[in-house]
Length: 342
Picture 1 (spheres, rainbow, N blue to C red):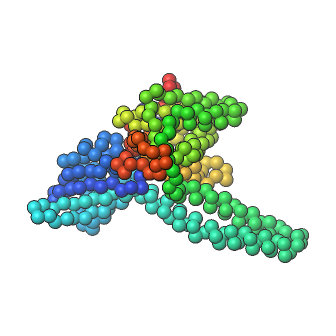
Picture 2: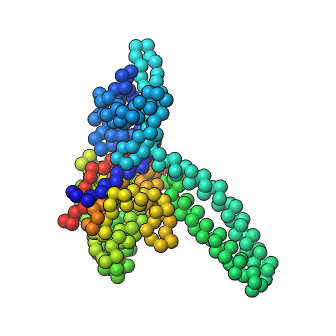
């Protein structure tokens, strides 16, 4: 479709692994990885690795043991190690998504700034009390406390971007959650000339998730969709299965849409289009998707709207108090373009 932009975001923080022979041909790939999430690891078996990572990345691996390559706009850091067996040479290539590094950096920043900032706020309050409301000092102390409070709000937003602590998860159905969130938003959206619809296929299975985090994910995506429709329109929430039988959540709007470069900017912090915004909404969504070992795809057409689809691993039968998904779970997505027919 002319003008369509599509951004596939694979927010795993687990690495992908490839096992190669001496000729750099793929012998095996792990199911939990994302290098073949759409087609499955068996699709890589027997292929020369340069067909997956590119000739330049292979050359760098041969020369230095490390390389960087991009797959569907997602950047990976590659490292290669060779093992000499009695009858053969095996190579193991590890691919780590760069996005995970940012979350670790953000987590460190939040940790290091939180306590000094609280101390500064206490000192500023003490200064106000000492000065006793002097007219010549009040403008300065008010500005000081105002800036400290602004930084504290930024810190809260950054903390949401950093990978959250492990929280108990349970098997949950997407349909009821979509209906609850739609009911919460409906009055405000109607005042803005926006309709919200829910479409749930009967075959959509459950997911293993933290309900509060999935709720927050939906809130952020619906808020973004509403901002993209200043003249009104329709937001559609879907729960469906992807072609590989995994549960998929989809938020579509009929808004202004985005060009490819706008989609790229939307995924970067500090690139908010809203006055005073910090551009962290989608980063928070990505952090939640990563925590649930899922995959997110953004499809957008300027003038026609945007679709955000999130595919979750299949939920195996587990205890309601299970804190982590099975180690072999993986997330993937098969593109579903924006549709008006539900």
